[in-house]
Image (tube, rainbow, N blue to C red; front, side, top):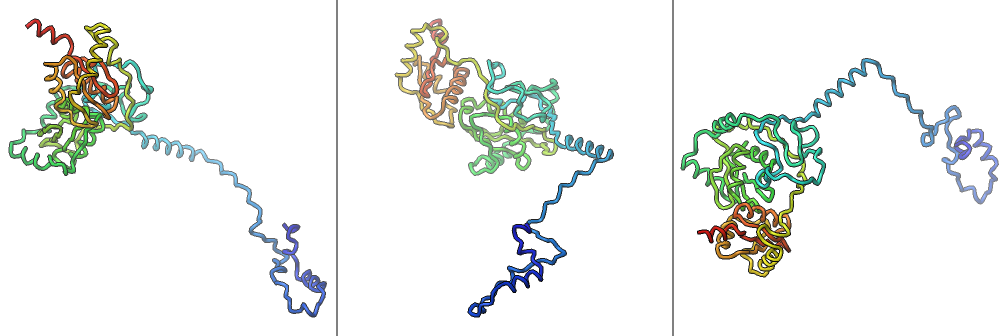
Length: 370
């Protein structure tokens, strides 16, 4: 840097010689040369902070044998801290949805690898099979039922039930859980117990496909949570926790970290319906598409009375149509599956969010035989 800026290291004697070489012009005697041009550091010191050389990096000190043992023990402690394995003793298989899946129907394929558990790696002592996490040992069901009876205690009297219903049945109730298209999901059990920690009952508002079969929803809520449904009005439920419920001794419910992708199931609608020829099936589909809709379903609506309407319509009609505009293709298929099992009937076509249902030949045979 001294070569680039030689004037920064001029000594006092060099400055005097430089001044002596400047010619003395009388007319320019008033001009003064700035002092900072000749400012310099002492000769002994060569100090230039902005352009000081960088220090060499120090080599890390060698670790001693004792320090290695301490580091190994600290890593073991960290592994123990990050070990979140949950040992849950709930007496049923874990599924994403309990009310909207049928364990008897096996899937024909999966949309994601089954080795990825939605509970997270190493967070559950059960193995994920793609649709469920089955329990390791079959528990004593009688013992479980007896424990639940002890938690529920004596049944509520009419006055206690009326007081409880009046407290939690209104729309402005803060202790409410919305039950949607997924039905009774696994993480909903954790939400129920969280509300039961500060309230005696939980208000559950049901919407969408699960409202077709409210009996199924109530049975799964009571079976999986251990509570009691004390009030039911159309799609509104009140789930009571019990007289002897203790939040400190509540069961441990491991939470799903994400929603698993739905597996692939066999085809719902066949090309040719059972009991009909190809031309007859085609004629039935055209007849259903050209017939007026029995009812129009809205997205995430209340379908409590749809099953009864379909049963009454099948007394006079052979094929009916349900208008499911804006409901969604997946929800249309779920509605068809529910109606197939509840009415019963045969879904023969899903097209443009329209459901065509055929009552089947069994009813005709029964009518002819009688």
